[in-house]
Length: 289
Length: 159
Image (cartoon, rainbow over all chains, first blue to last red; front, side, top):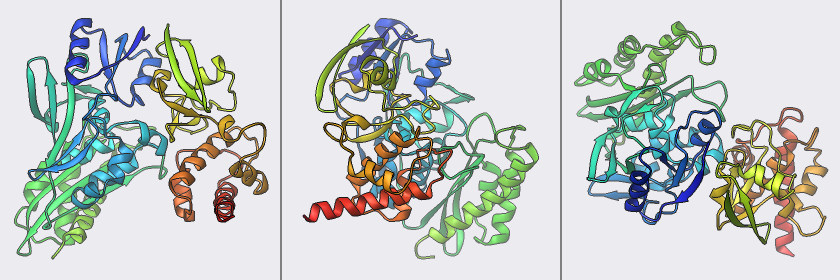
């Protein structure tokens, strides 16, 4: 049960409040997940520290070749951002797939990451973009790769009772890159995905120079299909190569049988299909190829 | 208890609330604005949609304190007195309500949509109400109603 709801005035102020309450206070952004967790008795903190009124954290910008997204950017803002549509379109599609318009208006991408659900659309896209998170602590700030912060379903190494993620950054996709985002769900809206595949490829001289493939939720955390990625480098980008990459990715997936999301066998088979489709989509998005 | 001060439908109000009360509960139980409906209670059906500084949110999962110092618009605030707003009248004329429980949420989602995009395509209307569920009418009449409202609002503007 929450005893009080406070508004932080700065990042430093937020960290001071957290420190003063010694684990009893927790940061809240959009609150779309956290509020329900509290109702289900899954939020031990009793003091909420709202970070949405701190000035200077609501931005989506390009700086020194990086796209940088502030902690207050909502899914709706990111989905509608021309910069994201142009230079990281898969993240825009991912953010536009979360919940419904009302949830996207309130929920933030940073909150989606910290909540650490393997089905989080935004986080899967950020895995494919090799994103990093800026973490503010009482001792200073650090950048941490998103691939290293997940500890299991709903478990994140960044502790919102002590630290604060202030921004996300990743390299903007260049003209030679293309990306794809494939989402399998029971409906088009207001539903978690059965399976999501985010892919970004770079083609040079008719061959794949790099490939990044992120998949969720077929393991306790979103993950990169590293065998498939390694296989693709140096290969010609064609359907049979993409199909083989799909099979390799399926071999890396460990989905559970789920009444909500389908059987293990079905979802493993669909990993191969969606990886192939995401790579094909990425290829068609490659400019100049 | 904490004091929540906000502007609801044009009036400044201050209420004493618990820190983890939902905006929907404060509107309904403390302010008597029962036009806002709560159905799923999980932010997944849109029945509780209200506007916070003009933006549609699901008030059943919004901590009420989020409204501190902000402007809240509920279905009761669409028109002064008891007249129907153009969108409400369009819902009546297009028979877009059956049991009616989802209707206030749909109308508030439609209001947010038409404020941002006064001349939406059918596809844009469907996207605009994609956060709202109806379990009896189906969606065709609702889309018709919003298209009709857009048309009537455009005619009003011309006059």
